[in-house]
Length: 80
Image (cartoon, rainbow, N blue to C red; front, side, top):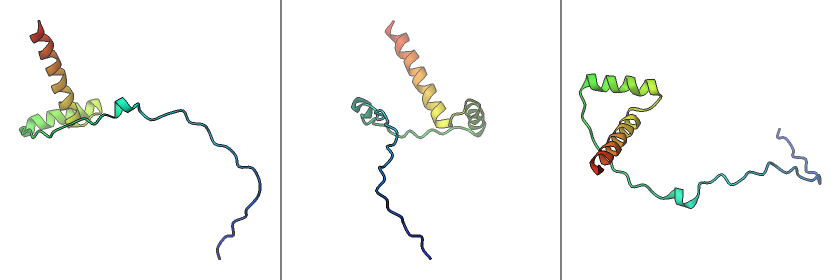
């Protein structure tokens, strides 16, 4: 047997008003990324996995951070 819905004329309760939570349109710009294949030996991969796990990151994220840091350092060093 199915439950019957009881309809009433009571006023609806209003929910919470949420402030604008969407990012600004400038922050929604599409980032163009490409895939890079990198071959590493097994001991290097194991070390990378340990460091990434200790930092709570994925291996790809950690490598991407390291590359960006190194490039930023190289660019500032070459500018001098």
